[in-house]
Image 1 (cartoon, rainbow, N blue to C red):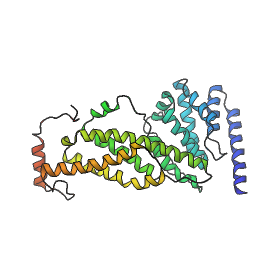
Image 2 (cartoon, one colour):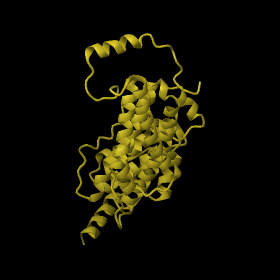
Image 3 (spheres, rainbow, N blue to C red):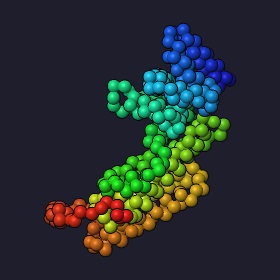
Image 4 (cartoon, helix red, strand yellow):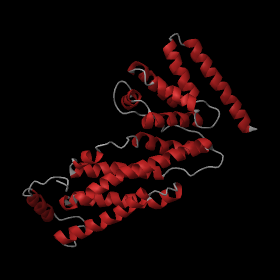
Length: 315
């Protein structure tokens, strides 16, 4: 009975929102944008947006920048004002699809919102809702905003040009993403909206694996050129990634060679780094204690006389 009443109230709210938009908007273009966003983010049913409604939003974003900007504004306004988890999740689903397969103009407007500059804050920290689906918001948001880029044709060449310190930071950002995906919910019987999000997170996990593999392969090429600090940070990132393995195996049943290849390369790199540093400087180099001031001074002095080397071991 409670679900029927909730769905009925949601249906009334949706009808009221559409009627209000039609009455208050004097601009046909603004009205079409507002209606497209409302139809893609309805209170009911508690299911993913219909393909037709989602496609309508994406197609509107292909026309021009002047159209794409109001779409993002309307979507963010809808997300920030709602107190309903179904509407919020649908808004995030639309954001995710814009990032993954939306037109460039729409993606560009999403990246620079708000128009005054700054980061695209979705401001979900104050969101409160007693429904189970609300627990997905934070996890889904991190995945949506981070795992966006498709694999570029010249990605390996681009990554090979990174400085070691930048490559470590790049890998660390992907590990952070995997850690957030690792916090995601499990499938819930009968909840198609949450299950849709879990499916998207699974896809983002696979995308992350492919991105991480490229970077691990690059590290494998340039191990002998890593500084002590870069080696320590790399080992820490690899350890954090390994800590996610058990949870990821439970959440996402993914039988892909790339996944096993990634875990194997993580183990291989950790072993190689340990052996290489012990060979070069003795067994105390990778200890986790504080180095003495004289040791740090020696490292700084010796570091100034290191010959210039290419960052990638390929060149």
